[in-house]
Structure formats: C-alpha cells, structure tokens
Image 1 (cartoon, rainbow, N blue to C red):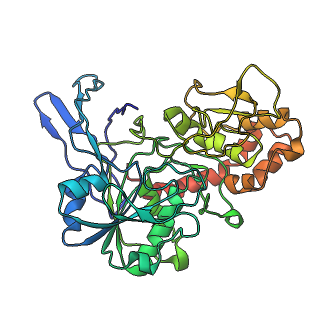
Image 2 (cartoon, helix red, strand yellow; image 1 turned 90 degrees about the vertical axis):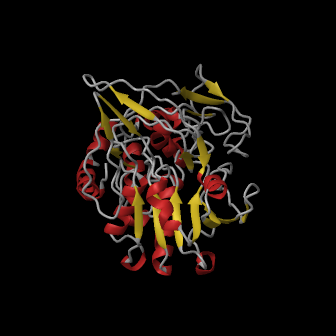
Image 3 (cartoon, rainbow, N blue to C red; image 1 turned 60 degrees about the vertical axis):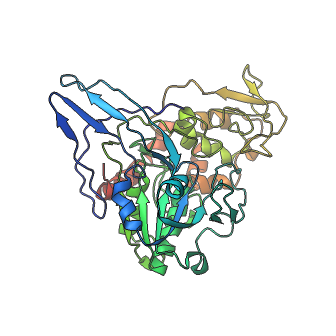
Length: 415
C-alpha cells in the first residue's frame, strides 16, 4: 500500500500535556516540511526513556520512518507534493537495533503483536521470536495489565493505529492501559497517528447500559479523533474507574491536519486490507450483528456483503478460511449481495446497505442477533429498522446526541 500524503496548515492546538510540533524551515521561496507520526518524532520521547525500564503496547502498525518524507509546496498554489523517500522499521526492532533503550516487555492487543489472529481469538502470552522479548496478551480474559505484569516498568509506550470507529477495540485497550498505569503510577507515553477516517463524527451515541469491550464510552460510532485526542477525552471526562486520571505524555503528529487523506502503510488488522475497507468498516461492521457476511474469508473483507438468505443476484462470493478468518461465516457456501469495492469514499455512517439487506432477507426474525445491540450501542437502531424507518428518519434521531458530543470533543482536539 502506498502512503499518500497531502499536508496542509496545521491548526494551533488548544490541548494540554502534549509535545508541540516543531517549527518548519522556510528557505527562499520553497517551504520543505516533514510529516511525522508521533512514533517518527523520536527526539521528543527517546530522551524520556533514558535509564528507564520500558514497556510498549503495539502491534504490526507500530512503524517508524527513518528516511525523510518531504512535501514541497509551490509558493503560489501550495499544491505540489513530492515524496522523496521513506523507509520504515517496526518501533520494537528500531529500539532494539538502533538504541540503548532498555525495552523489556511487549503488550499486545486484539489480533496479537504481529497482527495475524482472528477477530475475537484468544491470544496467549508468549515471546517475540525476533527480539526474544516477552509478550503479554491484552485480549481475552486479560484486557487490563495486572500489577504483576507492570512490575518493574517505569514508563509505558502506547503506539497503535486506530481507524476512528467506536467498536475498533484498540481504544478499549487504551482505556484499560490508562487505568492500569494510573493505578500503578506508571507514566504513559502516547505516540499519535492520523485517523484514516479523518474528522467524520456520526452514528448513534452509545448508551451506558450497553457498554462492552466493543463500545465502552458514550460516543458515536465514528468519533473523528486521533487516538491521542481520544486519550485526553478519557482523562478529561474521567471515564476511568473511580474517576482516576492517567499521567500521559502525548507525542503528536507533525505537519498534520485531520483533513489530510491518509493511507496506512500496513493493514491495521487482518480483515482491513486496504483504504476502501477502512473507509467502509464502520458502516459494514454493523452486519457483524446480523446473519450477513462482510466478506471474512475472502480478499475483499469489509468491501462486500452477502448471505445465502438474500436474493440470488449476479454478485456472489464463497467464504473460505484464510489469514484472519480460520472459520468464516458461511464457510464454503454461496453468499449473494453487493460488491462495494469500487464505491466512492463515504463521509458518514451509511445505513442504506443494512436497511436494504434487512428488507430483502428471507426471514427477518433471524436477521439480527444480540451482538447487534452491542455494536450499535443502543436497542433503538434495530427497532427503527424493524419499524421501517428510512435512513433519513433514523439519522435525524442522532442529531442532538451528535451535537452534544461534538461540544465535548472540541475540548480535546490537537489538530
């Protein structure tokens, strides 16, 4: 996947407790700037790790760029983009190979450290074969590091790529990491990365009684924040247990604005293989609470949908076991539905495909399952679809909650 960057002027931040972006250099009539993720900006956080026992929460997305990416602006149009070179190395490998930092432990979220496990698959503790470092799984029954698992750790780095959706569980892992660090007086350094779905804020607000690991906080399905901004919201809104707050140091992206198109250099999880899947993920993930497949077990995960119970149309796919889907829904069976792999980029939570599938399914009483309410964060959405409400009518019921959320969100925006 090619990294696509369009850099625009960065808004001055009103947030606190983060490292301010470095000033750019202006020479003659050409301004050269570097886009840096938080992880890339090693000068901001490597000094904080000196003489410390360091742990890290990361997975395959924790890449560091160690060659330059230059964006050259034409002085008139400010539109010319020139990516000179980019080399990456995993942050764990970078630290072990190129520094004297005492990195002693890896903490891995859903899908594991190398990102190959199925969604929901229990990951056991182990050892990284490349570095020999012990790996602590933060999925399954152990979502929050224990006192023993944090013993001897002076500072913890958090570097995970989020995709901006409430039910993408890395923000739930963030919650538990912050809580454990606060309880054990461990400083947390959060290395920020862009949200590939930018500033899209949409969907129903999660109701407290439906909180779960796929939705812990009263936010919409698409929250429109980076993971560091979200961490500040967790702290500021006192969502941690007993309203405790975590001592966090944020290393932001440099020369970034949330309106920038951002293409991930690596899959954030096994079933999000490309930009299209990441863009459609929030809309199609609601199908995971129904009897409809979203293409797990194919090479178009979260870009297609279908089931044996939808009308026999021209488009058909057959799920088969693959990486990230050892036992896919409807394994080996014909699934009829739609191919959305060339659909234009969506800028909201789309319900039209979900409503269409419900209306066309053979047995509507078996369409939804209990997981749908957890994903939606409310019972209302299923009830509204079953009652025959249009997408526009359903969306209208979200507006008050979305406006209230945006007011809260504005307090924590960095970019």
